[in-house]
Amino acid sequence: MTEKSNTNLGSGLKTRHLTMMGLGSAIGAGLFLGTGVGINAAGPAILIAYVIAGIIVVLVMSMLGEMAAARPSSGSFSTYARQAFGHWAGFTTGWLYWFMLVMVMGAEMTGAAAIMGSWFGVDPWIPALIAVVFFAVVNFARVRGFGEFEFWFSFIKVAVIIGFIIIGALLWLGLLPGHDFVGLTNIQESGFAPNGITGIAAGLLAVAFAFGGIEMVTIAAAESENPSRSIATAVRSVIFRISVFYIGSVLVIILLLPYDQIQGADTAAESPFTAVLSMANIPGAVGFMEAVIVLALLSAFNAQIYATSRLSHNLALSGDAPKILAKTNRDNVPINGVILSMFFAFVSVGLQWWNPEGLLDFLLNAVGGTLMVIWLMIAFSYIKLHPILVKNNEISTVRVGGWPWLPWASVIALVALVILMLFDDASRAQVISVIILTAVVALLSLTTKSNSARTELNSQQLKESH
Image (cartoon, rainbow, N blue to C red; front, side, top):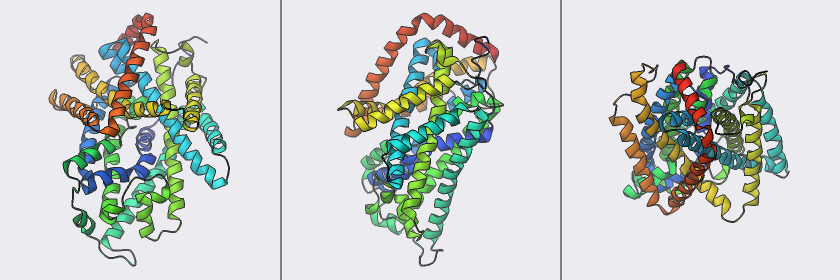
């Protein structure tokens, strides 16, 4: 079998798979456990922070969607960074995102395993091992099977959130037995912005990356049956639904719970979601939320294995990773990329339990800032490539309006967010860590400099194929 025929990816994903994958990636345990952190900082004014964060993500995803619809690639933003700024940009962006997902996978599996271990009275490494092996099998399968599995996995999470919003609305209206109309009582008691502008700023930092993960849609779209059309539908749908789910859930919480009772949660019992369900006298609310949180963690873990394996496959095709990662099996799955992701997921889980002094904190801080680097690179790549796409008549079904003002406005908003992070004691370490990590990865790109000519050739062939 020739190398060319042995490096092709599949094409079995449907638009509904992409949409649900994007939703599932952005709806993680952070929504169920971390929502209270932002509300505690900003009060009901956290809604403003979510709207600002949502606008930024809409702009970034729209720019990424236009490029992905015009030039579908499993390398997504890594590919466009390479086409815009050369070899170093593609290498750095691709491996930074890969690193971020691997570290997040470790944190998520650690959290899920701790809960599952408590259910069955066993050490957490046992359910962790079983889960990792199970998801390896899922990701070794034909991409259509993976898409179907992730669709139903994410569907359950989405159904839970819709149910939560409906129950919350009924509670607020006083339509459930034993409950009266709540109105704006809780908001009036605390005030809309109890901590003023500084509270809203702190809340914005807490929720800035809440929508992170939906960019996976453009990685997966390369394996869809009609990439350009699928991207257009999925990007619009995911952005709208995520906004409704997040803002709807937060609105229910701030309307129903007194401000002084809302805070960050380490367990399902402390989650504001659990508190709302308990108000509705739903039996087993804590156990139910534990199950939902585990499901959210495992679903995101599954999607991240997929994304990291496809990203490493694309990097290998571009000469930025060992050639062995480019090979696919008879089902067109980059099996070596999956194995690499699984291995480092285990390493990441091990780091969570070993917790070497200083190292884990540095790596997790770097994860917090990596998404900012990715979003900025998407914006700059778009600003560079958009005129070329227009000139070559490559614009497909997705197009960002307001050129060039909106793209530059998104850059200004992202830079302003970085400046805000520098003035926040808790967030400053994220900026410093990711600057160091980005510099190290960029220097590593020099080790594959000899492949830059082939990289440029691949980019040119990609352009010509569209």
